[in-house]
Every structure is written in C-alpha cells, then in structure tokens.
Length: 312
Image 1 (tube, helix red, strand yellow):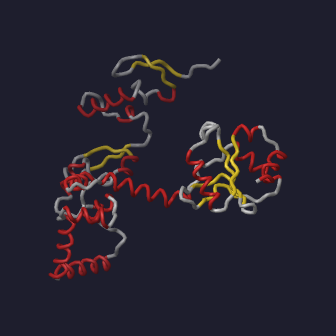
Image 2 (spheres, rainbow, N blue to C red):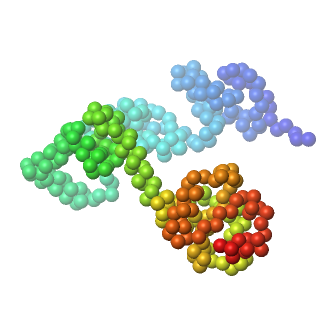
Image 3 (tube, helix red, strand yellow):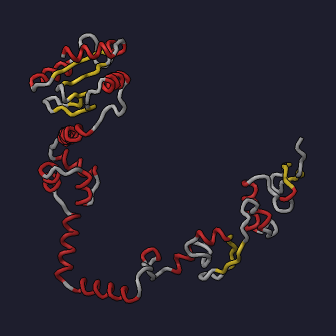
C-alpha cells in the first residue's frame, strides 16, 4: 500500500478541501489555476497580501523588479517573461512602448546587420535616386498603371495571354471577385475557358502520372508469372494513341499489351466501350492485345498463362 505524504488544505478562494504534498506546503494555496488567477487579481486590487511566490506555484522561475522608462512605475516580471518580451523589461505595457516610439523608426524595420558605413551609403543612394525627377516619374507611372486598369486590359491578360487569375491579381493588385465581375460584365464565359485549360493541363501531365499508385493483386500475379518465365516487361507504359492511356503490362520483345480487367470495374461480360475503342486503336498501330478477366487470372497457373502467350 502507498502511504500518503500530504495533507488536506482549504483553498483561500473557493474554500474547498484539496490534497497537497508536503514539499508544496506554504507554496500552493489555491486548488486550481482558476483560483490562482482570481488570487492574482485580488493582489493587484490590494485585497490580498503581496506574496507572489504563493500564487505562481506552476511557474517556479524567480521574479524580477523592473522600472518603466516612460511612466517610471515599478512592475514585476518573471525571467521567462523577460526573455519573451521584445522590449525586455524596459516598459510596463504596450501603451508605454507605443508612446516612446512616436517620431522614431519601428524596431522591426531597423537592420542590425548593416554597419554605419553601409547605412550611410544606402541613405545617400536613396536621396540621389529620389532627387532625380525622371526616376520619380517612372516609379509613379508604373504604380499608377498597376492601380488604374480597364476591362480590356484584364480580358487581354486572361483570354489572349492565357494568364491565370492568380497572376492577374499580382499584376493589377486586385481580388478574384473583381476580375470575375469584369468578365461577367463583358459576357466572357470564364468557366468554359478554365475547364479547357484544366483539360489541356491534364493531357500534358497524364503520361507522367501512375493511377492507381499500387498495383492490384491481379497485376502482381501476372508480373510474377513473367518473372518466373524470364520475360522482360514494363508496367504502366504510356501508349500514344488517340485515346491515350497507361497500359497495365507491356512486353516489348513480343510487342504485346496485357490488360488485367476487374470484373466489376470493367463490366463483365460486355466490357466498357473505351476498352473496345482502345484495343482497335492499338491493333491498327501494330500492337497485340491480350485482355484477361479477374476470374480467369485467379484460376490460372503458369502453364495456362504460357499457353495464352504462345497463342498470341
């Protein structure tokens, strides 16, 4: 049996009994964090004695007294808070920090990596550049072009130059909603255009995609048969026909395409229309095609498979 090493104590705020270990006696006086935060607020209002070690029992870091530079008031922070704050204990609040930065450059814009020499060089070059009126005009004109644009400019970029809405938003600094409103106003069917572009992109990238990523159990079985027979083959080879696609298995020595058709997905016994069209196109280009159904492959041996290959 485990022996108890603590005592039951009353909470100073909710006055409930809670169990406390001996090493926390005199340090922990609240039953939970909620009561601890209430105790903190009471200390700030002056209702409880100022003994912060009793409250912050969950944070064992020692407290540090600091003096605000702006309002010159004393305030208390822990060592962890000193590390987290950007102004590192110099200011008691964000308001004092904001008042001190009036008329100064913000801290996040200052580059501390530059030396004084490089800073002076940068400032001189910027002054010379802005002093030149020609450079000023060019910068202003470019900025105005980005802000001021007509409906024709967006239609040219979207339809003729074939740019996406994302690129147009970056050029003209607008949102997609405004671009859509302009296209609808000028009776441009952007939905059809976007669908065409998606179809063209899929055709370009389809030869490099492998779907499904993992081979089916039927395909793996026939691949193992070919390995035992020591016949060289390729999986998911891209076939360049009108209805182009990736075949399951291609044997270059026999110029043979093997398709492993599932009974459900390829609609046994009739088969899909696309499958019939693709077989015709492959035969016209000089390829041999061997289509095997799922139930045939499951009940097939190496000898049966070898016979089917020889017949082809």
